[in-house]
Image 1 (cartoon, rainbow, N blue to C red):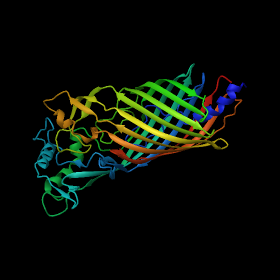
Image 2 (cartoon, rainbow, N blue to C red):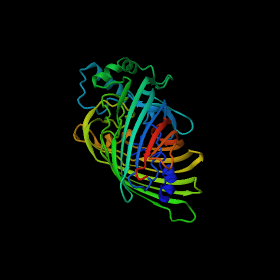
Image 3 (cartoon, helix red, strand yellow):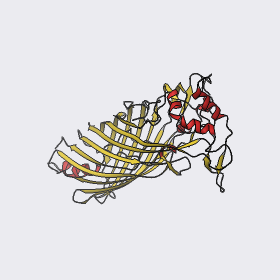
Image 4 (cartoon, one colour):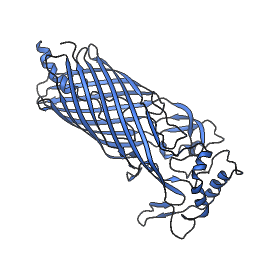
Amino acid sequence: MNQYTRHLLPILICASTLQLLGFDNAHFYRATNFFLEPRLERDYLTTVDVFVQGGSTTDGRNKEHETVRAFDIWGHHDMHELAVGVPCKDLSNPLDLIIQQLSLQPSRCVTSKDACKKQSQFAHYSIFADFNLMEAYLSFAQNFKKGFFMLFYLPIRRMKVDNISFCDISPKDATCPNINTPIWQTFKNNFCDILDRYCLSADPVTDINLGDASIALGWTHSFQKTEVIDFIDTTFKFGVLIPSGQQKNEDQIFSLPSGYNGHTGFQMSADVAFGAFDWLTLGSHFDALVFADKTKDIRLKTGKAQSGIIKLAKGCAKIERGSQWMAGAYISFDHVVRGLSLLCGYSFVNKGRDSVCPLDTEKFSVGIANSDESLFGYKMHTLNFQFEYDFAHEDRVFGPRISAYYNMIVGGKRIFTTDVGGANIGLELAWDL
């Protein structure tokens, strides 16, 4: 083995940690996975990773950063205003008559003494549900010459929502309307039939589907002619996110998309890392993901005061998905005990606001449709912890490794608070040995 190879192999082992996660990473329903470290500049290096992870929650954070039930992160679910603006209602139908009469009841809420904070609202539900997630990821990266490389990434997700219950949070005092108002009781007794009337299902959901595949081309460079530090690594990537994931089923209230809901995406990212003392690495990351527009049938908000995820009306609309960006940093302690490495990272994700433009503006108001809080994007702060052990030897082509990690949400708004734990089996193939 030549001198160049002997110097590069330890850097290969350190830099290859967590060479996995691609573009289909940040989602509101679970903690953000650790981003890519700079890729090693080594001709024809091949990296393969398989990750499996999972988590569950019943809670989330709303727009005020408060802990609420997971499906209440966009507000409580307003049944009082459910009928407002819904086109083509037929008041000769008893179910349509019920929702119309309910909407004619006066509005009221009970507020706290401190800041007019809504505590209890007439004809509103809070939804209790369990959210469970299992994911597997396959990643393949191949280096070429002069620092250029290609990355392919494919996720698979199993998402389950069950143990669902609708909790009536209407006022219980004697002032009318309240929890005992007759038309509200009638609505609750016919709730399932009303949903059926508008082709909506509140049944539990279990979906196993691909996420959004992605492919990228990148360039990486490792600068080692330094005296104070060991190296400076930089990587830049440009790629396309392919909408291979299943889109949200608009007729199932608790359906979630397994990717970015059918939108093609375009990403650019930059990574920088500094190494020192042969065991310490400090790194940073930034990426931005923008999406192409898409036109399809979706559930649309029809009343200005409506809130929550239950919407009766469906119409065709052009959707402009808001861009998202992520910034993060990490510290890594490489080979602190033989092949054992430790890593701690932090990331912040900001998802911009979506906008919708209904094609039939006679039936749907553009302004009202865009006041839907579920379109307002989200923010998430995540801490990432990892333990990895590699079995690489300097005279072998194969460099296997295993790792365990935990991603913990520490803040955000309009997110599920699903912490995620997982494990990885990875392999580097150094073809130039």
